[in-house]
Amino acid sequence: MKYTCIESEYLVALLKCALKNEDVPDVPVGLNWEKLVKLSNEQQVYSTIAPVINKINIPVEQAQELTFYTQNELVRMIAMKNELEQIEKELDALKIDYMLLKGSVIKLCYPKQKMRQMSDVDILYHEKDRERLVSMMKKRGFLLETSEANTDDFFKPPYYTFEWHRAIFDERDEFHPDFDLWKRAKQDKEKPSKYNIDESDLFIYSICHAYDHYCQSGFGIRFICDIYLLLNKLENLDMAYVNSTLEDFGIKQFGEDTINLAMAIFEEKEISESEQSLLDFILSGGVYGKRAAFGDVIEEKYGGSKIKYIFKRLFPPKRQIMKTYRVCERHPVLLPLFYIVRIFQKYKFKRKKINKELSDLKNIK
Image 1 (cartoon, rainbow, N blue to C red):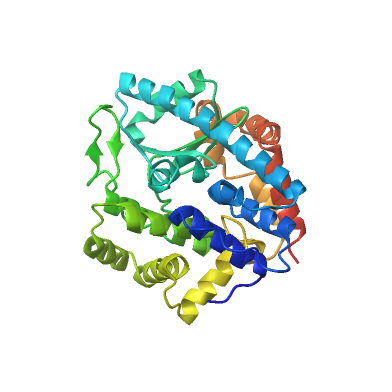
Image 2: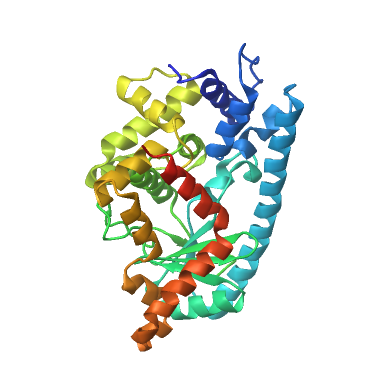
């Protein structure tokens, strides 16, 4: 197996040690610690390697940087966990059925839950409950940031982010398989409104989610960590059903490459040329892909025009504004006002994310 740089190779080695509780390998000669810490941040795996990197004598500046990252992430995770617990109580009281998705479930497979970083909490619910759900979240102090065809994104300062999915795929996207997670889900024994995702469906959805990111801008090494742990920790994983479903969705080969890559990395199996290419692609970007792929999106959808991209981001379709600000459905004349309101709200609460996106946009050739 080949790596693009020493830092990528050592990061993967640290991830392997952390997830398999193995001895930490010797630090390779010429390792750039600043570059490694930056890479772990871009890939959002610094909390994953934290337990093992503490056993290494690393430069003070990078040690402090990693400590800062992991402590902040831990505080945020605890706060998000407490918020979720309160929301779940309200969902039970309102009899709104829901299902936790993605990181909220996958983290249970990690040696320690705090080792799996999450940017938000993803929850599936039914379209019929949307009005009550939105009302509940707003009463809890959340701002409905964005409402898309299949999701509602809520934010509350300083960092509470919840994505509520009415469907797991947007029918407007090229990849949108007909996948009903409710069909095999089981009602929770303690929380009557909670449904637990079927283990095989969780694995399939994880592959689909990775493929969705792969088609748009790519994905990072954290997805491979997830796949490896799901393969090894899920007790009722039905691979015949998994393979059949992935074949129906047209992504069986992608699923096989992803699984084989996970096994090659963590179990030192042989790696094919296509899997090596996938690894190079993964390690060349961040947790959700790389800037080059972002540039491809700009080229394909906006003819390479950054101005058109910015305009589209500032002024999305009016149906999205109406979905987010329901008053506009009754009074369309208010649409121009709420376009401006949206811009100010985004800048107030998502300034860091906006600046990052503008920086990425600036660096596209």
